[in-house]
Structure formats: structure tokens, C-alpha cells
Length: 538
Image 1: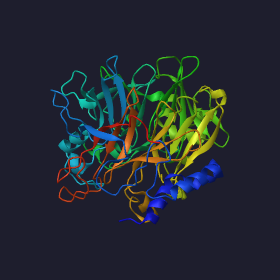
Image 2 (image 1 turned 30 degrees about the horizontal axis):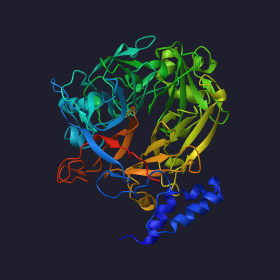
Image 3 (image 1 turned 45 degrees about the vertical axis):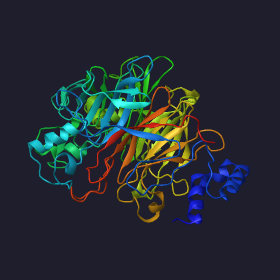
Image 4 (image 1 turned 60 degrees about the vertical axis):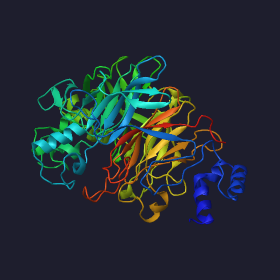
């Protein structure tokens, strides 16, 4: 049994010890007095759950969950199956009551041990069948779900159920062919994403280099290609040019029609968050999820389309968006032979233009009431930043077309906050920020991270006495990460991905997790529907 001292330390951390002074000493004294009682009492509308150490999805009191669908479930009569490592979620209602709809689900990666039966160590040889199995496991799923008697169900063999995976031919929307082609084979590394004002999905290709490697360019701009750069080695089996990946892909949920949007740049896209400008055009905020990379903004040229527009990179020191336009930026025009090459090599263009290098920019979301832009910076251990933070960017005059902004730290990650490595973000209708985190396999349960337990889900008020203080709502199973938070239209349910449980398993006879089936079953990435308390606890 844990001592009361431990209970009290855990409780104080949930109150935000490290930021108490910022909230006012009067508030802190009231909280400290409450903390002197045993057991801990709720201080916010939800009672925090403790950091988890068990192989379960643990939730705060009053929350309930059900598994909607898991990896391997057959979704249609064509023999297609729900993919692996589900991530970003987007719900599109198909009736007026919002009790049924199409759920888009990203599938970010394919763990070889479970998907193709091969070792997950880099350099392990793969044959054609192995690679096809892994290709079929990534990309995205479109599935029909409905809510009956308060329970969300997967509707098997519905006409909308389909896969867009690593084998699907996808047109490339660009000014010219890329590596001699106008169609790419498949989408992969699909991490976070967004939903356009006209009701399409933006699914983002993040760590494409793990699948097909990467290209580099010499000082003369000549393409350099080294075989077997990737972890999975797909390029050793199929001709898959890296330039065909690392894009934002737009998908129509009712038809599955897709296209790769090169105008938004090529990098490790964590997500793509659209926002309508006053003139009806669409602005998209994006983070490049890699150490010392940048935050971007895209402004479309016309309403209802993202095929053409202007790409900008953030210079946070100056509070300015810097254009990466081939025509407007002389430095970029000097570096690249044409605008398409500048987009293929977006990172080089951004660095040359003075884009700020940040600590793994991941998900970005816009506050529904204030218009402030919240940016998750996961961490950068190489520079000593172990826990990351969430930034708050405010456009001048709250206009997304503005090229000036001010930026501040909304939440500093760390042991005091009880939140390390913020990753995915979502706002509820009240403007509360819901955050998932992504502590790596290497640090979970180790050293100073031990007190933080498993990865989790947190709610963070953005106003009032508790603004900027995370309260943990859920704790993930062993090795898992919670991703893709998405609210139902009525706000009563939160759809959530439980990704890579058992990721550190060294063999099928040495599994670290058996979630969600329990016993000796294989761990299966799954989508869950979490029912929020009808009357929040006070």
C-alpha cells in the first residue's frame, strides 16, 4: 500500500505545484488546505486518475470506455481489415441526430513482429509478401459507426467501409511530375491530421523515412540516393521514391478519393489544422515532428481548395511568418531550380529563410472561442529539453492571414506539472484543452520519469484559476500511447486511439501487454469511445 505521503505528493502535482505562484497565493492556500485531508478530494470538475503502471486503460471516476474496433477486424466484403497503430480520428455524421457517421482513422506504423512476423530491428531482410502485409497495415480506414442505447458500435460491411493504405494509387497535386510521376503508391506514416471546412480529411505523412528512406542533395542540387536507409526497407523490394511521401493527403470520406497536396510542403507532417480566414480562404497550421524543426502556416489562394497557396515558416524570435514562396523569396529562388523542388526540400527552404528550430513541433489546434493557436512541442533531449511544453500563438488582430504574431508558453512540461512530452491536442466546446503525451519507450518507468507512469490523457483549463494546469483523465496500457482525441458532435463522448500496446515485446512468447483482450491474447491497437460523466464532479 502506498503511503499517505505518496498520495499527497501525487495530489499536489495534479494541482500544478510548479505553477501555483502564477495562479495567486490565495488559490494555492485553499488548495493546500484541501490537500491536507485524506483521501484526496476533487479540486476541478474531474477527479484526476493516478499515473498508471498496470496493463489497462485506467480512467478518472465517472468516465467509462468501450472498444469500438481493433486491429485486424474485417471491415468489408472485399477482405480489407482495420489497420495497425491507429492515430488521428475524425468523425463525419451521416444523420441529423449525429448518432451515426463515418470515422476516419489514421494508421501510423506497422510493428513487424505483429504485422509481418519479422524482427523489428533495422536491417532485417523482408520479401515481397512481408512488405505488402506492412503496406496493408498503414494508411487509413474509413468505417461506419453508430450509437445505440449509449454504446458506439462498428457497422461491419457498410458501403462506406474502405481502406486507403500503402498500396493505394494516389494522385499528386503539383505543378509538374515528381520523380517523373504524377501518382504515388500509397500513403504511410499517417500521424495526426485535420478536417477542412468543406468536410474532407487531411491525413499527414510523418516519418516516411522509416518506410522508404530519404534522399539528399549535393551542393549542385544533384539527387543522392543510398539504399536501405529506412528501418523497414520497403525500398529494397519496391521502387518507392521518398519524394512521393512526406505530404498532406486530402481524402473525401464518402468516396475515399484522395490526393497528395504538395503546396503544403514536404516534411514529417505531424498534423494539419485548418482555419477559415475572414475572406473565406483556408489557413492550415502544421508542425514538423523532428528535433530542431519548424512550424508552418499555409494560406490558400482560393476558397474550398488547398491545391495552391503560399507557405510560410514561423520565426518565433521576431514574431513573424516568413514566406517560402519561390517567386517572392530571392534566397529560395537561388537555391532551387523551380517551386516544386523548393516544396520537396521544404526543410532546407525553411532553414534558409530563418525559420525557428523548435523542440519537435507536433499537434496544433485553434481555440474555438479565442482563436489562439496552441502548439505542442514534445521535447528535445539532445538539447536538454526532456519534457517539452505547449506554446500559445496569437495572430495579430486575431486574423489568420496576418504575418505577425506574439507567442508565449502556455504550459511547461515536467515532473511538477505531471505531464511530459505533450503530443496530440483537442479542444472541447467549452475551450478546455485535452492533451495526450508521448514519453518514449526509453524513459517510461525509468529514473525521474518513473513517477509519471504510463502515457496518458490530460485535460487543461485555458481560463480561470486552473489555467495551464493539467489534470490526468486516463492512463494507457503497457507501452501504449493515447492519440487522436476527437469529440462526438454532442460532446458526450471522446473517441480515442490506443496505439502500440506491447510495443516493446521481444517476441510473440514474450509479450509485454495483452490489452484489450487480456489473458494471453495479442495486444491490439484499438479505437475506444469514452463516455464523459453526465454531471461533472465538483
